[in-house]
Image (cartoon, rainbow, N blue to C red; front, side, top):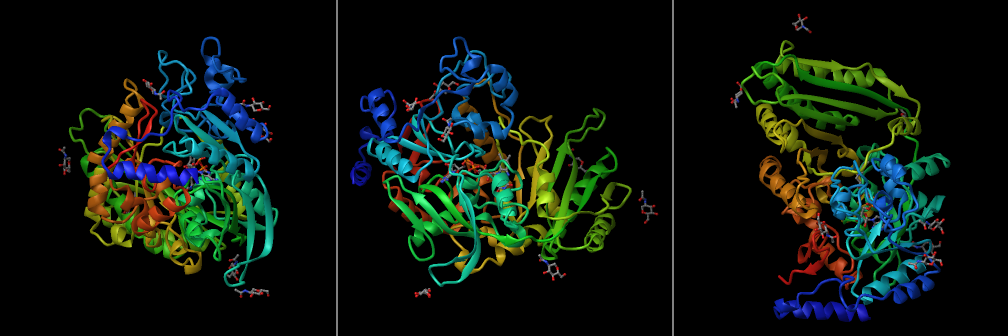
Length: 605
Ligand SMILES: Cc1cc2nc3c(=O)[nH]c(=O)nc-3n(C[C@H](O)[C@H](O)[C@H](O)COP(=O)(O)OP(=O)(O)OC[C@H]3O[C@@H](n4cnc5c(N)ncnc54)[C@H](O)[C@@H]3O)c2cc1C
Ligand SMILES: *[C@@H]1O[C@H](CO)[C@@H](O)[C@H](O)[C@H]1NC(C)=O
Ligand SMILES: *[C@@H]1O[C@H](CO)[C@@H](O)[C@H](O)[C@H]1NC(C)=O
Ligand SMILES: *[C@@H]1O[C@H](CO)[C@@H](O)[C@H](O)[C@H]1NC(C)=O
Ligand SMILES: *[C@@H]1O[C@H](CO)[C@@H](O)[C@H](O)[C@H]1NC(C)=O
Ligand SMILES: *[C@@H]1O[C@H](CO)[C@@H](O)[C@H](O)[C@H]1NC(C)=O
Ligand SMILES: *[C@@H]1O[C@H](CO)[C@@H](O)[C@H](O)[C@H]1NC(C)=O
Ligand SMILES: *[C@@H]1O[C@H](CO)[C@@H](O)[C@H](O)[C@H]1NC(C)=O
């Protein structure tokens, strides 16, 4: 109740334009910030699960100011890996978004003069193992106007699992996993095979757990990605183009709200919350402690085959041809996906190393690893050979090289999954990108030359000598399109007509300024250089919020589409104190978070 009162007072102050009364979440510099004794009392209530943040790299600084228990050498060695940040209560994989507050020497963004502070990390972390602890801690913080953040693995590419002067709910230890062969929907009594999954799992432990019951889940391709944020933001992976996104698999969730309610949301109760959790963005409505997800039968063998297109020389003709070859390949994708193929690819565009070539056209190459299930190598080769021929016919074999690998077969999904995870995934750098969901119209509804020019304009780097990278995810298609209405929630409707989720990289982080200023610089460059190309090529097509430009000034339309307005209402209902703020979250435009001050303040617009 205290929470509700706070919200109306904030709203009132804004309404009467009390700009002098700008309302901010509490910081330790405010008189009302709880004392050590207050935090200690909370800890007692929580059964001793409260952790005062000790940045792990503190051991790399004189006197180890925060008493890190890990040797600096260990921290330096492990810093570049995702699993490491996931194992620590406070750490995140893109530390720039936590103000680079305590980096080990050698880490991207490290400057010897900066020192080690808690800074952009949460002040305290609840190492939760029960919903009661989560509820108690969040009510306590909300009543005190303290910002709350939620961390699963810390993988978020835009640092949405960190925040200065916050209390963090760490879901890492919600690790239950069960199988129910006939989970009964309370709305219509239909039964579904389901995996009941604690939100502390990552896709490695969840996929292996499901495999023990002979089932597969729609998860991410990388084993270190957590189920918490992946699913709620959409969640694509190797099965999404066949079965729909992660968010489309949710039968039920258990959610703890900032007001302390412990809710079950399914098709018969708290349907609005279920709808929001089904793709409306993570870290915003409450803490999901448990998912009930559709569990699918093994899809059969996995047959893979790769196509690569590259310029056959350094001359202008070859470079131009490679861009057109790239475009022909992309234009072929909707039909290939309708025929059952999925996959991921990568495009590169390098600047000339040859000074005699007086033309700035970049040299492009593209490689797409296609795969599909339960089929033969002959079938896959018969789908891809005509694509190779089409590229050669359109651009000529004297100017581009097109190679088609021999198809290969893996016995089943888990063999494929384990082989995709044979090396640990990287962390420690900032995931600065912009992305779009592209449909048939954008890929095969425009002339090849027009498509090639969009690609060429997108594949630029802020550092003019850099190599531009594009990641091409074949994660839309029939799967998202055929999801039954009863399973659909707030997920960006753009996914229903998308084929490719395309990510474009190339921004540089200025290490001579503060993280806030560096991010402002990146935001401006993306807004001026890349967003205009997307807006021209794919107006209104939407983007994937988990792998997108969190500074997109049109984030409401791009990340949420038509679901946005209803999500604002649901957010207001379940988090009336607005304790949960994330970058480009629902209603986030009413707040200003500044890494320099660490303050989160309402804008009173
Ligand atoms: C190496 C790597 C590989 C990736 N591969 C894929 C991929 O194959 N497919 C794909 O779709 N995406 C992929 N992503 C992007 C991924 O979807 C996002 O990073 C996502 O935010 C990860 O969620 P998390 O829970 O692991 O991360 P976290 O950083 O812990 O959380 C992300 C967001 O979710 C919130 N959150 C986490 N848990 C909960 C919970 N239980 N309840 C409420 N909110 C919660 C957090 O507050 C935060 O806002 C990848 C990212 C990385 C770094
Ligand atoms: C909470 O209590 C536990 C157990 O007594 C203790 O180890 C821990 O340091 C305490 N945390 C805080 C923030 O005081
Ligand atoms: C963030 O880092 C900058 C310097 O890079 C520093 O001036 C600022 O105080 C830091 N902010 C917080 C909240 O620690
Ligand atoms: C978190 O809690 C779990 C379960 O009680 C415990 O095993 C683990 O050591 C704790 N982690 C930290 C970092 O305190
Ligand atoms: C589901 O089945 C139960 C028990 O058979 C029955 O009582 C209930 O009315 C059914 N609910 C619906 C929505 O059909
Ligand atoms: C594999 O394909 C065969 C027919 O080609 C079909 O009968 C079978 O159900 C498929 N298996 C799966 C798991 O889809
Ligand atoms: C480079 O060459 C291409 C093809 O001839 C031409 O279209 C383009 O304008 C040239 N670019 C520059 C910067 O000269
Ligand atoms: C290019 O195509 C021509 C005509 O089809 C063919 O004769 C030639 O062998 C091809 N060259 C290469 C390198 O594939």
